[in-house]
Amino acid sequence: MSQPAQSISETAPTSLQEQIAEAVRNQAVPISQLLRLMSALDADESANENLRLQLRARIGRPLSA
Image (cartoon, rainbow, N blue to C red; front, side, top):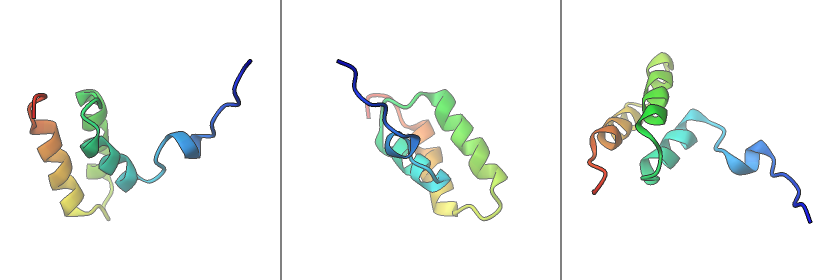
């Protein structure tokens, strides 16, 4: 039969920080999503510089790494 749909809070991280942390861990995240996250991070004046560095390192990392 059909399974109940998961709520958005169960399927996707809510804060920008959580989304970036998940994207850094997950090698399957496409570069387009990483670039959207970087754009959102750049627009956030209160953004953590460490997050920016982690995301930049993830964007530049080879797929085989």
